[in-house]
Length: 417
Image (cartoon, rainbow, N blue to C red; front, side, top):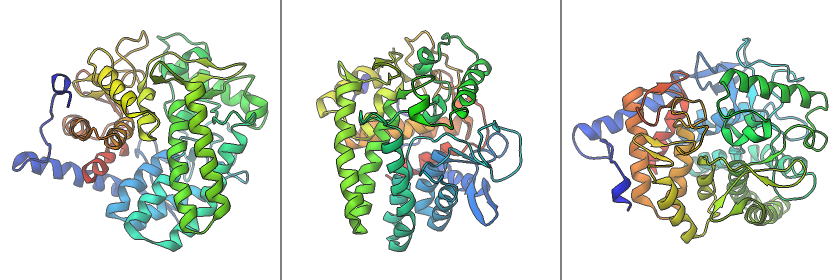
């Protein structure tokens, strides 16, 4: 336990008022998911925020299903059925499905009713969370074809040169739209505005649309990053998919997962790891590290990719270091020492609940139970302080961006762990 760096929050599961507040946040999380639920053309899904994000997003829906699995498993199943209903013929699952009319986040993707990008592949994890609660073999068998096709797409189409690392073609595919770890690839300054950063990413969309978003054709011209969180999430999800394939008697699928778990894990260690830390790399010509320090360092904890000694050094030296990532209100998404650090910036230093959740799960895997509890309580305290907001100031706790934002519901899963 890193006592000198940890500042406990109020709830913590204690009796009395603290316990009531703890349970209230959990209840509010379920109420938020119910309030944001929509049905269109027979498909039931949850919008991340009614005003700011009124459609369906890929990894957001996976988060929703993970939380709903324990309270409303039928709603969790419906969420994922809606998500895979718009899977592309080649297996890709788009990161946005436009179920209803609207102008927000609508760009010229060259597609019909969806985006042409994907997001971190959390789908197998979400399916398995539902199965753990329901033991519904029929649901597992129903979703398996879409799962297999999606992960095969990532391995086959997003690794055309068999380097055994999946590439992303736009920062939005990382789920961290304007993270400064991509600044060098985009050739933008550390103080770029959110508006100008979006314009630069839309230039990528325009460029990739001209070659039908083909990774092999587009990657050397525009943007091709082997991102640490994306590949770490892929490894963990392949482990789960291997187990699903085994339960269903899908020997080919089981072999595919087993092989690629080993290949991706080894490639991450060989190409993305240096001096005790995993770094995302640009791979347009050769592998070059993207050396802006972000929460991506901690994502491999989720997939058990660090050794126990490496994990302890990372947790003690970086995660709970107040001069870098640890703040009064949780984990900064960008180190405080970086030029790009902005406590009120979108993904440029502010606190987000999804990174908290991934780090929490990683800490639990490595036996850092007390540290995980502190991070969970920081997350609960943030919502008590600012409500279910999109992101938060790590120094003051002020909430920014979308209101009634569903990522905060992930605290309910942390409470149930």
